[in-house]
Image (cartoon, rainbow, N blue to C red; front, side, top):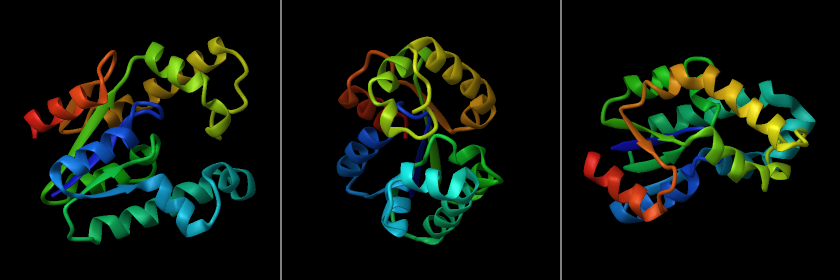
Length: 172
């Protein structure tokens, strides 16, 4: 089985993905990490040198490789992965897959992302909490259609990673 974790940046996909993979004894793949390894550059550097469109196309190609792999795995998608092209449709059409939306409130996302925005190319230019919050609000509105199609939705606000993993395990 393949379990795809989706949600906005800062929702906890990487942390939860690693923990869930250990719990299930599955392979773990972080799509952003895969891209960095293949390109030999950080996501920031890829965005700066080649742009978002190049990044999204590469992301989609790597997703193809993951979908063809027959291993049991947990995959942490990038926050925008489900929204590009037909990525989410391809995930949903796959046999023996589950998609899980890690749903975080705008406040939680703003709190988490404001302190690490320098490492996030899409938001690094936003200087105030208010600007970041407005950006997140707009993006969540645009992405809600895709995220809401996930098989399972788990609210992550004010929960420990262990609690979130336990909730996912109960619902699989």
